[in-house]
Amino acid sequence: MREEWTRRDFMRLLSVGGVVFASGLPGCAAPARPAKAAQGTGAPGRALGAEDFFFLQLSDTHWGFRGDPNPEADVTLKKAVATINASGAAPDFVVFTGDLTQTTEDPKERRRRMQEFKEIVRELKVTDVRFIPGEHDASLDNGEAFRELFGETRYSFEHKGVHFVALDNVSDPTGSLGDAQLDWLAKDIASVPPDSPIVVLAHRPLFALYPNWDWTTRDGTRALAVLERHQNVTVFYGHIHQEHHHQTGAIQHHAARSLVFPLPAPGSVPKKAPVPWDPAKPFQGLGYRSIEATPAKGYRVDELPVVSS
Amino acid sequence: MIRLAPSSLAATLLVAVVPSGCTGPARSAGGATPTIIEIQARKFAFSPAVIHLKKDVRAKLILLSLDRVHGLSVPGLGIRADIIPGRPATIEITPKAAGVFEFECDVFCGEGHEGMTGELVIDP
Image (tube, chains in turn blue, yellow):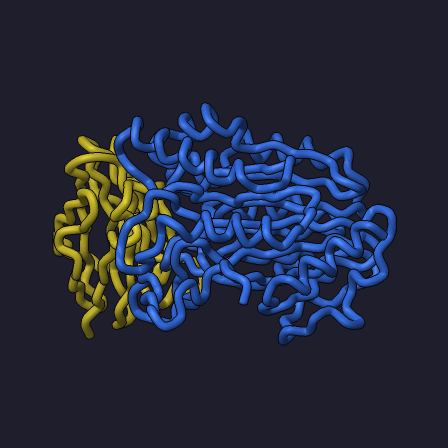
């Protein structure tokens, strides 16, 4: 029950944005469906059990970015950290799904930005914070600096009945997973019962969301073929700087907002470019998300703003 | 390596990608001597960035990198090639339908990577 109260406190204190009920677990065959700010009544995830929990996904912080698309890029991440801390939220863990830093060709500057990023997120009042790289962090040095400062770029772990797999589809600058990682993935999930929940964390979409804008993973279909052997797979990813929900076969895919600038909907404009900053509505379109895992029913995904109103 | 367009695009073009190390032009439809267009890739632009081809006229695109590894991907036509410094790649193409197809660098090359794009214009 402690977790339930913590969760309710969290959602009350923060302005709740879009809510999605991701029903990838047994008993919920329907695809994820967007809903208006529902505030949760009657939603999946209310009947919490001993193994229910929630975690936060933050993505695409691009620490080190400077430019008109976000004139407050030097404080956006800090504000998000402050918002989370002020909420009193007690998520089981926080995961950053890549592009922690803005790319640079200078290896020293890359490490300096990563170190600054670590110091900022160290302020989170959450003991378990996990990271995966984005192409801005890892593609120019094949993940070398990332591994020095954050550890392995791919890994898996168990948490309260859910098997989490963090994939690296960015250290190869072609945006590929590669044969070795695909073999590792197959072996990693081979021991997971077919009906047990699996959550995949990645930076790029594993499916061909919009290849014209490089919103894909070159060998993502091979990963999906491996994952399709399991009945309850949900992917949380970043890269596209906006909320997006999609289903391939039985696998659900949920893209998170960015913490630097939003990008337009796939193919909605001729050229991919950041959505212009609106001084009247700073941080509009930015945010992070809370993911409530309720193994008996599914996942509840709440999109949350940088600054609570 | 001969890479054909997906079946849904078969009516659009016939294409062959010849990576570095291959000798001689790949066989393709269209006959006659192909139009040859050299495309230079460098951080963070293609030159030319707008390429005009004619429907049913065979063309050979020669891809050169002036600095680092890039890629040229035309998702709408289902073709792509790596562009490696010192190892020119060739794409042979015989467009079968007019249209405008975006292309991009699909090998992350730095801060301006997202803007490294162009258009392949197939004129009637």
